[in-house]
Length: 230
Image (cartoon, rainbow, N blue to C red; front, top):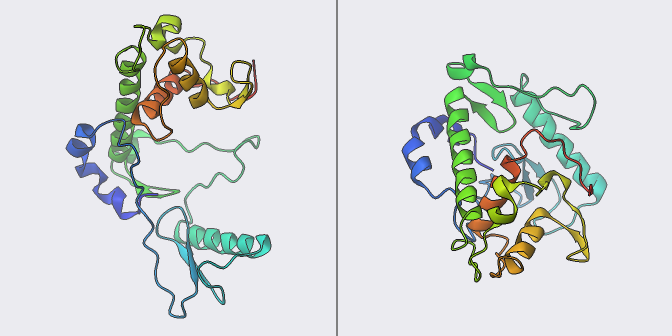
């Protein structure tokens, strides 16, 4: 996950963000956490915010924790995070009735918000949205291009699914008769590429597959998740 200091500089990264490939690079290495060193050589575990960490006394890197020990570590991490962000909203139960959904209002342009991974402004939010929309646009381009899909028969995805119609990404994972097992959306995308499109399947880290998933999901924005539905 990005470190908190990344949010402070996000507003100045517009040209770089928009110039970069929307789909990213295959096999791209994710930025690692920079954790403090233990004076005693004990295990240090970091939270997904990239800055909060706790030391586990008496446990060395590579040692296994029991579930109870691991839960204690997780509780310490969350306690430390909440102490640093007393006004931040952490959704503790995603499906619980009445769970509040954080919103970004126009007045956050000048007032940073505290959220899970640090503070951000409306401008930061706009940059992230633009990057996401760029990925979706790349997926749309590939979806409508037999050449980009590697088609050997000139068939492209949109010929059967105009604007990603009848793809229903919100229903995955689910059992698909064509594959004879429970699959994810990306599995069905690759099945279609191999069969109607007569191309080669895409690797899980292929930027084209990520972009196709982004476009198909974006076309169903606002549709409730309903995995397993046929």
